Length: 565
Image (cartoon, rainbow, N blue to C red; front, side, top):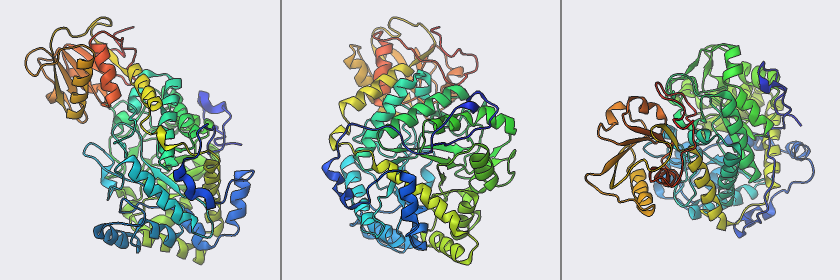
């Protein structure tokens, strides 16, 4: 099997790789909530052969349906509010999520939500995740709808669970530290264990596809627009971390998606609102951006997400997500990738220069197999069907895409679904604590003993929740936490800069990218994440119960990667 037959002039070029599907397994047993799968077409033998046999019996409508992955309004598959029903009808012509699945014979659906500090929130027109129990019921209803169709194959049910800023399901779930924190820990074994725990939770909820991890390599400009969603700025470190995350997720039966091909890390423009330009040479792409994608393929990654990026060295002026030169000539022919390619959301500005129907056709012709979040499902579906029937979109291209999608589904279906009891369980919490503790970095200050003594006052710019968690963790660790006076520990959160620093702080802690620390005084630490596990790990370092083993995975002007050797 092969995923990338790489001809890159980089050290990873010679690595032998797997097909873009899932590997590994789990000892978990199917949960009672998985009974909707009982009527599904079960995997038998080679997934690619089984997929090809099924595709040969599918109608044009069924084939096109496998390529579509929209969102839907409503927190339940069958019962939604009048407002959600009206929004669904405007978007799809059907009232409920289950009706949408049946009407379009969908291959997949994405669950979405948005929060104030989420840089991707603009594309999410609704929120349909509330709690693990609600998500489990929703996914069960969606699968029941899919299995009522003639093909009887499960849906791909995806979400963006990157951890850190981009995290759709927060309440009642173990929260890993951000990718940048894992890069600071730089321990692939810890990363793999953390992502396996995370994947096990997602699988228990009925989610079998995660649009993670982020495989972008950060450039010289401080973090660009990707920031702490990436593992760092060193292609080798990022490649190792991405591969570990892929292995962990897919061992739990959840397909991983590496994004944003061919690399969004060297950009200062957000592709949600305009088209970023990648100005580096092809050699620069090969050495600085592509290694994590190659490493992901060697780990058997399920999907590669095409980015809305203007790749000047390959196809200037055309978004990579609509470029056959990027997706076929580079990704498939030169790199030899044979797995599933999914677009970034098609309701992002660079994809909306065409109407929804035209964009759908162009995206499939360019080499995408799944169309994510088309802005108008009715028009995208009609555009594809009309193009197949007119011959503009060769049916063989649609057959090829549907076969890849179904091959992935049969691979996923072979991994038993974990029991609901794993959600927010001790194993996941332990994995999160270990990876968070490995990340804490002292960039300036003492490397042993307490970093603060006497009463401690915690202040915050950007994360009051994290402040509360740290206060609780400090109290539990034996420190005296006060509201006035004392040694000030200043937390600086997302989107904050020099003006948010405190001149009186004894200790300043970066909760996101550490670039802000170049302007700070006193003792400087970074957790790269504001999760509860990260705040517990920080408290242990502050009171001297633990050392800070992390190293900054990005350069910070005027500071070492660590002050601790």
